[in-house]
Length: 505
Image 1 (cartoon, rainbow, N blue to C red):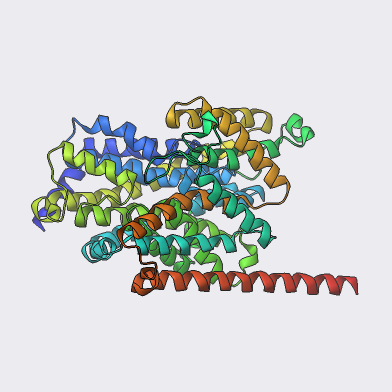
Image 2 (image 1 turned 60 degrees about the vertical axis):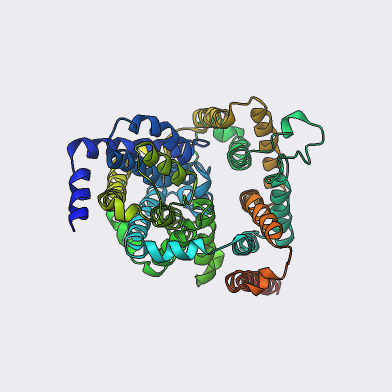
């Protein structure tokens, strides 16, 4: 109790709360710009915290962290472009909902789902940090590879109207992830002697090109709409966000399930919000009584994806606090910040610096509340984006995409890759290919390859993938996931066939 009160006293000072508020605003804005990730925002924040007290500095970075997971929702809902990799699945239903004339509802659903997801993950963090951290550290490369295989089966539920085209898109994504240096040895491969491919295809460049450039190109196809000043989405600015809060709370099973998915995946080092976002969405779709409505503006899809990715914020702190193992790049930066202040991060952190750990718990809760306040108060301002005509918004967003892609590695060649990938994404979209499986392949491909090779380098016996219980559990879940998806697609095809037969008769 003494440590708790000490942490509470340090957080609830005027200076700390003001800094945290600024951090929340910065995180939301940074994540809303395509290409400017949460990690980049945290890196820029780190030097500013060196002169602060340890807990105060960590609290500010946690505010940026929590705000960033919500900020990606804004461009995902209003532009159809994921602001961060962890908001890819949010575009599937938030953007169609906004296009139907409900942009305020789409944003409100995401904001409230993010808030509750963060709160649930903070509660789990406080209660279950030590046992979950011990579970996460027992997982070897065999379990991680099997987990990624299970995550890759999500492709089967995201293939759109054509299973073959969806699977091909997933394979293209996996192929893209193999271009460039070998992740284990650093040897060049599949660059075909082309200089700009020698460094590989950066994930963010692929993400922005596939989603943003292709989406913007599609928007300007209809010249009459561009010239007449039609906006990307339409809808009333006036809405009641408190009613949307009740709508989110009326989906307790989906909200809690997605948050738990986010916590569990966040607790696995290296997994992160991009995987949790997709897995939570996939599980919500599988559990739904109307899976066909997903991708067309289903509120359950928005709630699941945003609760899932936001819950990884608390989940990622579990191995960091319990074992001194960062769960993500952002957690590694938080760990570095503590080390700069002379605090040793490891299993004894909670015993030697109890006030700091409890202060981090309190900071997570306060950061989620500040994120909610900032998001609700500024939502009407963000919704003004929905009224901006296409001829103005398209070039502005295009410039942001180019700047974000260049800022990643400061390489001009990335801009050439961005243009090429954008054209390829536009062609695939025009041919009826689902782009989500491609992005999923790019995200998970390197993680799967790295863990597969680590497993085989540790022990060349491939049977360990099925003899280790947790690994076997993930593989069985992958098989069941594919079978369930195929069953759903066959059922949907038979239903469509019966409808066409009935119409013909």
